[in-house]
Length: 419
Image 1 (tube, rainbow, N blue to C red):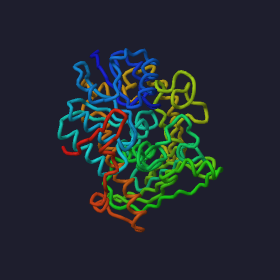
Image 2: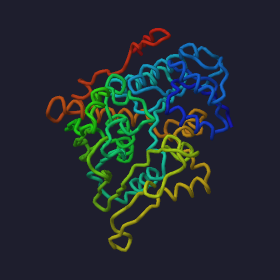
Image 3: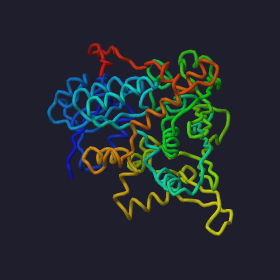
Image 4: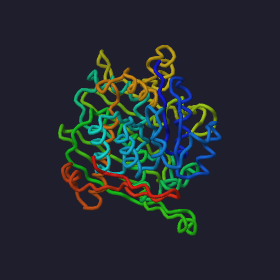
């Protein structure tokens, strides 16, 4: 198998999940890492036994090396487009963390940059890489639902009353800061849920979006709230229509005064698919080793993602079928090891870079991410304008939220938005 030498930009929390997965792919060697926070960089280097010469506070210097085949970008939301564009213009294929960006404008820039440079781009959308998605797509492709006319996504990220990053103490406060995050859950974990749904529906062409954003849940401690301001929404809701006649309900939240808040379904003339939790954990390779979702030891029973079909069988009886998505994923990867490429982001990217998967056979995550950005920007624009907006209006009115000039202790990174 072909060796792939990877460099990582950003050594925050999510980079540890990436390193855990790279450790499961013997053909991949992480050769260097860059991080503007020097103490964080040094601690990361010690954790993974890197030589000091392979650690950089300026990723631009790292990219001058001659032993890098591809780059893994693990920075915050509003840096995804500037940093990933720099990487591709420097001549490297790029694997970027989610979301693609916080606005359609920035996602389109990134998408077009990949086309202009001819570099391979992938976006981390872990919800695609599970038997839940794989089986659901088989059911839809086989026409078992008949004419699909409506779908719904509603997720509260399992945090209930805790707004963005209040419960996720392992995460950076940047997730609640609009300057760095752009928006809240609608773009951050929203790309998992909206991305999975739009992919399953065949990336239908968007017609219009009606949306509303809320910052609705009060902080339990007013003094703490004043010292830790949250400048992103904690809920986005909406209704989208598509040019093929489909309609889609949307509800994405990081905070709600309710327990089980999840209900996802696709409805057709002959049957429907529904599931309670989207599998966005990233697969077993990123979960092994004890702890929590950022490196925990598997999924406990109630959290095991499932998939159900409701309709008629070949005899005309009304039936409900449990596809046992999680259990089947374990069986498939055991008895058909080649299936693992459909159950892990980074193995999928490795196989794409080394030619086992092509542009036609891989999950086209940049195109999926671009469609998600158009949808989420529709929620934002509609909320601002107080009415439904068309896809064309979204494209015209979308603006960049990216950080094009980044001041660091090591100088100013002045990024170039031109293609």
